[in-house]
Image 1 (cartoon, rainbow, N blue to C red):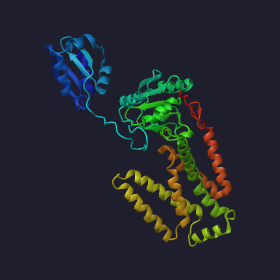
Image 2: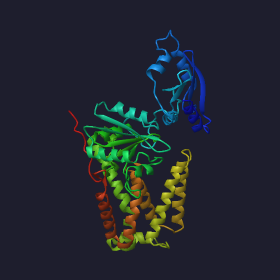
Image 3: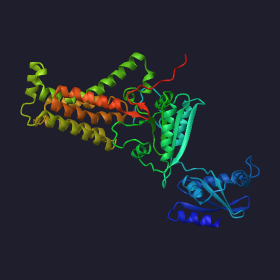
Length: 440
């Protein structure tokens, strides 16, 4: 066992937060081994002292340690336990190692309101970086013995916990087998970012459609569980990953069911309309102005031609330039601090828009089209879904610049065919999720 101590000291020789604290348990000298950054050593020692007081109702710590929690561990297990925030107790008298669950340091933030998803009428709790807390939030909303929780330790040199959660009576058994097989086969691969998780789950790295639907709201997660989805939690990520991600997730949200059916239907219709506007408006401008102006009424065609008088660029270059400027403004609003971001981007957008019109670089109508496209793009649910539309609208614009109105239709057919061809863990991307029948 002394060689084990030597190996542990060697493993943590460069870790200044590693401690070897002498302590006395029931008149017996021991060594406490752990990491100061993960273990609340002061309060843990106080807990041990209370346990050694025979007048308390707690059993003697010596009995707790040496009779109940005796764990035979090798060097690798001891190092792994220390890295997980456990406390190792080395008994000099017995020359043995014991594993103990200490009081951890408070390194997690408290449960707060969602920051990336807005809730008008619904629960205001959200996931945090601690996986056990996230699982607890789900269990608090799912009172069922059918809830299955399976945790895996993945990674080779930097281990991380990955948990899958699903309802036994709702989830597709074949999909569960595929997901578990991917996890077991790639268990030695490290997961630092979601791109690593994509390769971990056997997903093509150049896939445009996101395979996971990300949410930080427990309500949305529970709703997906009832639809037969599988939830992935990765330690350190403050959101749930929902498998599979389907097309209708772009327009439907669990919180919609807190409204009446007419209002819910109207909201979802507006989201579908917003996606259609995002994909078609820029392309229609290019098609109707540059390729097929004869489709327009004479008065409208003359009005558009007058607004473009003096502009040196063709409509395709004009549209692409403004779309790229909008993309830069959106990215800047994300990167800037919250205190100044909205102000800077709003003022910058107004100044740039007015300046390019006055300089005869773009037309007034184009500013209206681009503004409507940007607003419509934000109506869909999920930031990753908005990114899909932001990317695919350029495909239709390119088709429209070549084939006009026919190109717009060709682009929509191309995108529809691409969506219809995608299958995520055996589930078609364009299929609707099955909802468990509600009683009553």
